Image (cartoon, rainbow, N blue to C red; front, side, top):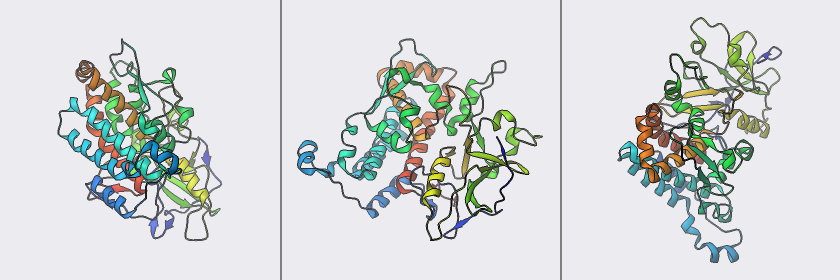
Amino acid sequence: MPRRTNLTIDELPYQYKGKKLQLHKSYTNPRFESNTVLTDDIYTYIDFYFASHKKSMKYKNPAVSKPKYGNEMQYHYSFYWKQSMNFYYAAKKLPIEATPLLSYYSMLNAVKAYLAFKCDYIEDFVEHFLGHGLFEKIDASANDLNTIMVARKIKGVYPLFAKMMDSNFDTIWPNGQSNAFTLKQLLYNLAFIHRAFITTYTTPRGAKIPELFIPLENNSVPCYHKGNDFNLYLQIELEKNFFGISANSIPVQYSTSMSPLLTIKNGAPFILVSANGARRNTTDSLSTDFRNLNSELRKEFQYIRSSKRLWYLKRTNLQGQDIINLNSMSLIMAAMHRISEIARYKPEQLAHLMKSKENWLMHEFLTLALDQFIDELAAEITGQDIMCTGMK
């Protein structure tokens, strides 16, 4: 990772409309001017948000589509959101072995609400709503997370959603059985269960699993700073102790596995600055260049739902087939779909997993994934950062 020597940037973050200009949770539509929303009831908040941002459901070609697909209101986003809420609360009342199916259907309906709200016309999504877009790669000998696999289809709710989150989704995950991912691969790429993953697969005499996520110093948030060229640059400080108590620089095995979109700041061995900057508008708005840069950089990070701001830099340039550089929602949904199939059709296989050496990882995923997913999706719907009460 090269050092940045010819750029100086302001010490304090750039101020935009009276607020620090910082990375937001939303991948696709961050509202940088908005205040942090404090709530412990995301479902009710999104209900209110939908009510105040009314969007009519309409066909692009009603003469053809309405006789084929029916009344427009049956596809209303609020209907799907309430369905998601019903599945969510039902899942929370069940034993953990019974939660995968309801958790997945909560996610599925939440995604349908998002798609119905964001798409311009019903024709844009209605055919995709006929299928999930995910399927099992059958292997009779599969009995652990490294042999249980999931593949994706061309059409369905999942691929439509994943493409809206990542424009290069088809390149990263082509359709078909030959391009299936294992559950172990999917779970490895999720920050909110990464400690459980490392604990599960690291043994005293075995090979150590590479840490994929690096925490930021003092629960900080990646912020934009103004450079001496008047462009805006993202700056982050990595947690020094992550690399060892006596570390005085980022070890080469870590620096080479980080994205080339980031460089080490000259004279500050644990501070990274974006390799490219983006111009500021002279008006009270953010430039298209800046929004494109932010969209690119956002993919390098994951956050963990918490009452604190817990951001992590992902080692997206780490070599190996286990690295899947998709947004965390796509990974969560694919994994939960596969586990929900197991719970429905092969409960004995789920029972085996819950008693195996992978039981803690399974427990953490099934306990935390639904809340993490809904938190992230709410940010995509609103463009706002939504935090638990007590955190601004």
